Image (cartoon, rainbow, N blue to C red):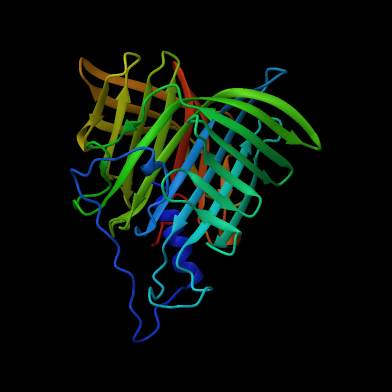
Length: 357
């Protein structure tokens, strides 16, 4: 779902195509295209936008819980593709990192943005290797992902070890996001990542361990015109399973589209269509900074084989709102949540104002 955030940023920055110039032709997302690894861990520079999105729970040596997120986006803006200048914005990279600490009571975050090139920023093709200045997310030959990022008062130095195969979302990686078949992305996840590393705050590094979730999507399309935002959740379940569910909402709060998947502890996965996923609100929280009202306690219900299954989501703490307007992004809520038998992350967009792309 996060691809719309960087598309929004690209439009806001105001890249335009000069007269007589050739705008890029973005490839379509089509069903039946087999995803291939490790190549699809790497960038797909012809597409409009993509991201590498890691969220998870950490526990410190003194048994304190932290949530974290590290995100790298790549966007191919609608600039002229035939511009020979080395400064032409053919690819733009944006990264975001945040820590959710109940002792702080709000997000600690940092961000980077740069045009690709000049040895300062890149999204490599062939395998995951992303760099923006001193921030990095890469996949090594041993299959582990590693990241080093720094934000407002914190540093993250983490390694993510896969414990399960790739989970293809939608129809073998073709994931619909709207009523039209063209409103789709290529989408896969790596749930149940084992995390180890350090979190540094106030000049002191603390060892941490935990579990994370990696989401990968790339696409060339935008949201349906009637959409105002979306809800998304990814849960690492205690039994080794994994749940992903999302809905794209219209102005009335009705789901324009929904979907998801549930992988059991035996490795077998079930995919859900729009009629099989339902989000209901249990409690709202109002931000004093922006006035936005977010349904921070949700119940997610899926129609699985054998009957309905439900998870009640409760936040690590309420104020996990991220205001990225200073860098051209939206206001949204993304935070660590607990459920019966699992932990993960919940994302809520379009509650402060409609996402206009």
